Length: 202
Ligand code: VGL
Ligand code: ZN
View 1 (spheres, rainbow, N blue to C red):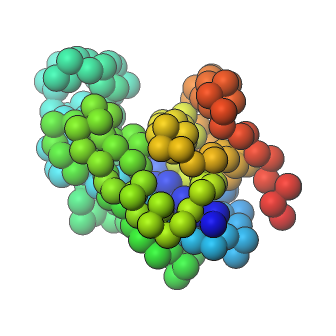
View 2: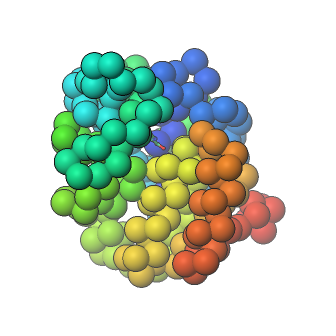
C-alpha cells in the first residue's frame, strides 16, 4: 500500500497568508492530480493555539525568524500562523479534500513546536499517524506540501525512522529558503529517502 501525505497545504502557507511559502500555491494542481495514483491519501494540518510559543509575538523584544531557546531546544520564531479556527489554518480552497481519509493535527501544545506530522519536535507525543498508516497496511509514503525545508522535511525524516519507504516528490513541494531545500534533499538522500521527480508518477 502506498500513501500520499499532504503536508500543511493551508492558507497561511500560501501567498497572502501569514507565513507564505514562495510559490506555495503552484503545487496544488499537481497535488490534486497525483491523488488518483494512491491507495490512501491523508493530510496534516498545522493547528496552533493563539499564544503558541513558536510565535515571535510571545517573546517580547524578539523578531520573526530569530532563534531562541525553548525548553532546551532551538526554536525559530514565526509570525502568528495557523491559529486554530482561523481562515489561515484552513486548507486551501483549491485543494481537493474528498479523498483525504484522515487529518492529523499538530502544533497543538502551546509549549512545543511540531514540524513533523508524526511527532512534536521533542518526541514527547505522537500524533499516531505512524500507527494509523501501518494499520492500513501502508509500506510506502509519498510526501508533498509545505514547507519543503520544515514540515515536509521533518515528516520525511520521521517516516524513515518509522520504517516507511519514503519518497519526497520534488516538484510538489516548495521551501521557505532555497538553501534549506538543498540541505533537506541532501540529508534525506543520505538517510535512505528517495528524492523523486514527479514525471515518474504522471
Ligand atoms: C511550518 C513553520 C512553522 C511548515 C509550520 O508547515 O513547514 N513551518 N510551522
Ligand atoms: Zn507552525
